[in-house]
Image 1: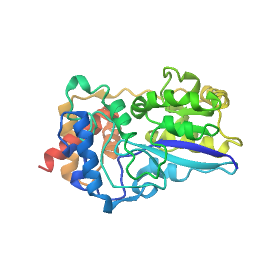
Image 2 (image 1 turned 180 degrees about the horizontal axis):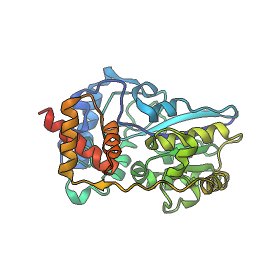
Image 3 (image 1 turned 120 degrees about the vertical axis):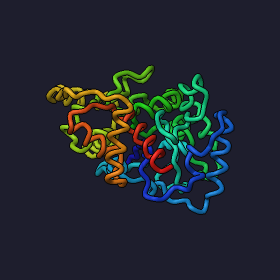
Image 4 (image 1 turned 135 degrees about the vertical axis):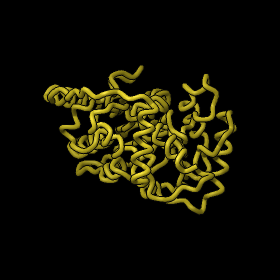
Length: 314
């Protein structure tokens, strides 16, 4: 039976507690090289707490990943992790908190000088690929993955933030595939990607009506649909025809006339809600805000949420 490689983003939601020294916010170096070196040392000190990649993450995104399946080919799942780089489903890693999202305390760019932040995620990703320590000689980059399995189809499932971090790695590996059409990229809202436009699966929020579920998990839900409905290993050209047609069949997105709020107004809202119920997370809180006909972009809201959390927790 054929095998398809599927690579997905990690998620901030974890099923296991994360030690303080394994939270990137606590690595304060302003040099990316030193920051990664300290990070590597901290994770290695906590080897005893390692768990299977499959069992580390939580939430809707990860539930979809765990349900990936096909009756027509086997699937190997890989994860691009901001903390560890490229890992496979059955690798064991230490619970950690690190992300490529810019407005987050555990961002890889958080402590770097302002002028170095735009390229920090790419550089961090390149650095993780050179970390060979305990990964059983498996590929540690997407370039190596494609070189190791040149005949396999590769389905990359990524948010725009993570796709920017790994795009150079994808471009470097593409010539290793027997046919560039073997690479398909699912990234909701990404209409263009230099050198990879023909590999992007047409996808935006309109497909939420087809896949169901929350918009934040649209990428993994669509990937699941692709894997379950494909009788042959996915090909970018075939998916482009199918999903371009499906998009055209969907109604236009509903537009909301919500009132935009300042950062301080959003912080005030978050403080009020957390003082009433400190178990609330940022996603349901944002839903409450929007239900009240107020507007705030998701990433901005998440960043302000974590600011207020730190403030309230002293």
